[in-house]
Image (cartoon, rainbow over all chains, first blue to last red):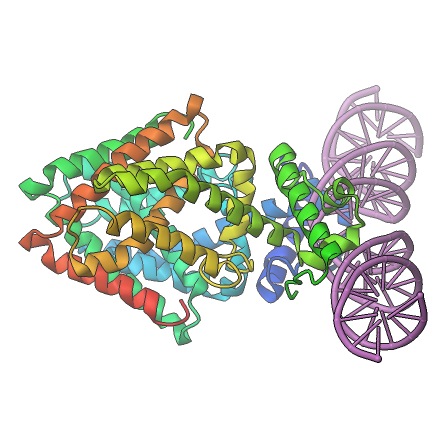
Length: 228
Length: 228
DNA sequence: ATGTGGATTTGAACATGTTCAACTTTCAGC
DNA sequence: GCTGAAAGTTGAACATGTTCAAATCCACAT
């Protein structure tokens, strides 16, 4: 199950070719319809070779995930360097997620369910995928910290992680969305990003102090205490 | 893929026996480790016969889900007929979920991921599992309506569905919980049920009127408009 | 040039979910 | 009790993810 790193020029070529074929096929046919044999065949390599570099079909999905993350990060870079308004930054970032993922809409369901499986090494709550998750959370930290919004420290601490979770929720909604141009998802994004920013500002109200403290305390406790 | 209903005494016996064996094996060995062949073998029936009554292994999970739901409903019946305080009813109900599911903790991860797959017929957002989901949502409607809490109509309308979602979240947390006696999950339940009840009462604050309206409108829109 | 050891590649073999056409059993109507 | 159609049963066959021991390749030291 160890992830084999190529140690030869030939190996690098093979690994890259297999990954390429896999990404193409995932997009063309979806996750289930893409067989390990078809990946090997398109690569021009034997079945066993694929398993030399990717311990399982799921691990190919992890690369797929990394791939879309990089596309996403590149897509929002201009926005993040230009815009200062938090709501606008957040809206643009989340919109970019679904736009970036659009070519993979048909595949996304299987992938989502694969990743959600706690037994999967790809589960973002721990395991191989953790570094990549941390990268995504960091991206949301940038979305927040690069804005001109003044966020109370206790909220700012937990906000990126919450926004990552929120992004997951939007993606799950998007998977089910069959509306033309995925307009419904975009509507939901616009409405919810606005709501989030508004609720953050409301969190300063004295009546909400108690609940805010409890909620943030709970989240912090969950994140920091091991196992669970 | 049609779900075959037994039309013979012999058929009923077979179906019941297969289901029994499956439920036992799921508990004993987990979902993946239980093969269709092992189910057939324990039942004393051929492999093909299992597929006569259950179109797929996943459909056996649906029965498993129904089974635990019935255990759960039975477990909380006394509480619901006795207790009037909403927080207590809610806490008891959610606690009972994880207590009821405790024997299946090891299996739950696979099952959760199976069910979460939008492509699965078992996905609760549509398909074969919808009737069962509606039953569970109804249970939460009873939890709310049988309490002495006065809930504004717009909230009351959406609350049961939200509580069902909340229960899903708790279950997902519980799957990861490795603490002795699953104490962490119970702590989180106590804290969150309390928070929920408190937030419902806060929703009447004038400052929150706008957000409340928007949130409920959004949820309603999502639920009622088809597809998505 | 040649041998060596590790990296890479191979393809057969295995396990398991699923399908299906042929076979057997059941039972309602006579 | 007979009969024939419907219901139930069977096991072989298929597709696909995965494993693994053996074969091949290749860079490098000698």
